[in-house]
Length: 292
Image 1: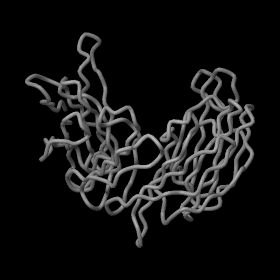
Image 2: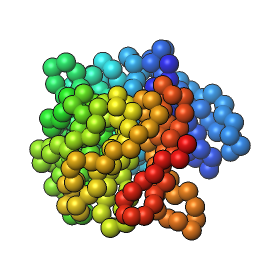
Image 3: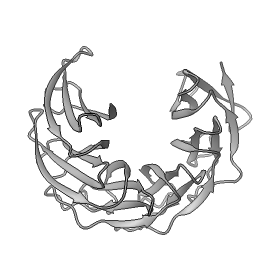
Image 4: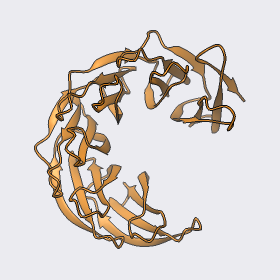
């Protein structure tokens, strides 16, 4: 039952390797790449219970890749890399109920990686921020309330103030939440923007060519894409534009399909339809048209 995978050169041989989190045996396994697309099984590490998400960064400043693992038992596992493809367990942190995603990013502008985790249990739904100390440890978490059942989080500057903001997908409230960063690792309370039924994944790009960040949301239950056009200040026009996909999209990415046309199109992977949907950018601005 693989739940998450990240690509990185963990043994520093110039070739990409894989770290795979599997829920069935509750482990994180390293697969070492040979540069031809083939992989050899490396070491495997116990992950206590049901790892669901992985993030990679240098958490202790030794220039070697480390891993953060979000665990289903409301804990966060930190594995410190040795630079040879093996890892040392550093610490386990408790922080909330039912984690769904973890992302590594520098949110307080001290050049040290921090961790941002979404969790959405029966009692609470929030996004949690761990500020890194630079030695492989983290400060006590600070939580921000989200919509019900946050599924994932992206860290990026949405309002152009050069501070990192948070974009959270709320799976059971049919919207997304934006938290504006203050540059010190703290955030404003979230502002919500409607999507459609069952949002599950997002991608950000300038889809209409106005120099402002827009958001495309894959909606699993309504089987469509919501495109939210940005105003440039971190807010988005409502209602969103809607485009039909195959049944139950669960992932979306932005792609430029031709070198002579830099405008990003969109691709969704459709779970129940066993298809992908391709949307090509076209004029007038921000229109996106599907191609079967």
